[in-house]
Length: 396
Image 1 (spheres, rainbow, N blue to C red):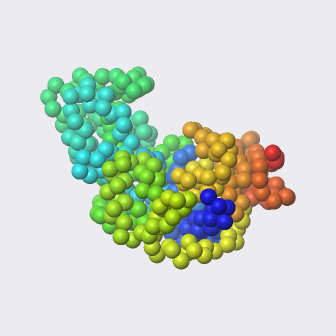
Image 2: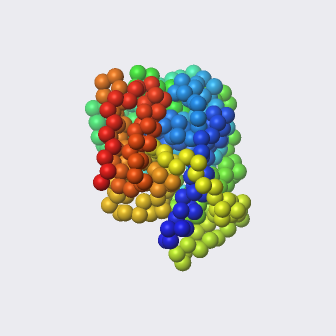
Image 3: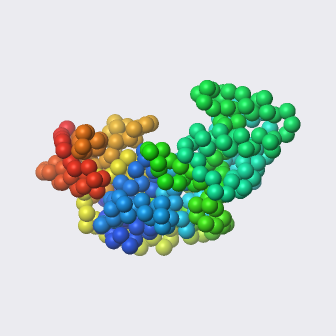
């Protein structure tokens, strides 16, 4: 792909992701709702929102999530915990529900337990939803407690004779801590999330809590086809031009589900040719794509799993395959140093004593960028209420 084309795509996406400029705190929900903010590792959503809106403290972010509840955290695309505007639950939850025999997201592996139980998935999912629907006022203080308590509540609803297998040790690991029933619940919690039954509560003593959706939000989720169409529109706006297969990878869903969702928004797309291949944009985004604004904020330090980095066509932001493997790892992704939309280095913040230590590596970017990176690292430490101590930025 020509560099001029890649530069235009980067500028378009920086704007779509609210990374081309500092946006006011009043647009925090809009920034979070562009395509959701993944929260793994814990705190990633705060770093992502910090990089998009100006003047929003950690305390104010937590207030939006835990007190005002204008933001919500739940298992969403790829089964990951994601923070998004509560009002957009039909987009980030309901749209992910499997339909018409499609495979649910994040349940591969459950078949071993189903075979031992001699039960299909759907009746078990219906029973778990039934338990959650009557779990008014309950709060679970760990994922293990959530799995095992829900498994215990499901037991009386199972067909006769299932108790010995349900209470047998888990075949998936930690058999001393988890039963087979608890493992089944663990798999089914993602579908329950998509159906508007379970969400994350506040973190307590370093661990997440969990609550029924209706209890936490105050009303049931209203699913519908509009949410499904809007999810595809969000993806196209943030990651276009793109291919239908890219959507399946981003969502972590089956090809059949991605194809169905794609078709719901097909009438609002326009094809575009890139390197002899057909890619798609939202028709309404064509003018913006043809002439995207230049970034007023050329340098950003993105955290691990920032939405901007969650693209399928990684060569648009980083051509070198070896470097790509450094940025997008299986576990423990580093942060990315981004200059004019291009990944030009890595950075890793960590607590060291009472302060923040930052190590970074640059392989591209203008001379003197090291000082600007250090200045942004210091500002990030202030946001985290952990003053920057050691900061080492090297260039390869």
